[in-house]
Amino acid sequence: MIDSASARLIPILVFAFFLAAFLLYHLMVFRVNKHLTPGEKFLYPLPLGQMNQLTTLYKSLYPKSIVYHLTLVSAVTMMLLAIAFVALRIWRYAEGNLP
Image (cartoon, rainbow, N blue to C red; front, side, top):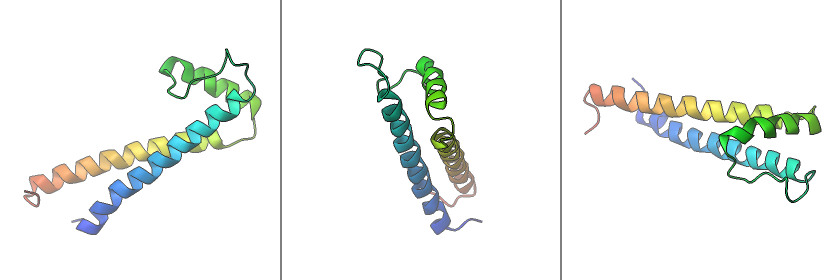
């Protein structure tokens, strides 16, 4: 059984990876927008259809940068930790350890 300290650590890690992904994403948008004219700039709340365009443009402007990959890894890790947290809570509830 996972103790309660470990169960409290998971949401903290989810928040840390969320913050990392959020800041790295905004860094990507900021760096790409520096090279675009005002009418072509990406907005920060980017629609899903434009994410591929941002990715392609970012990789063409900064081919050696690992920011995109770190953003992706942070987002996927955050999602996996969130799923693990929900699964842990359901498992503890099923065992009768939660009210």
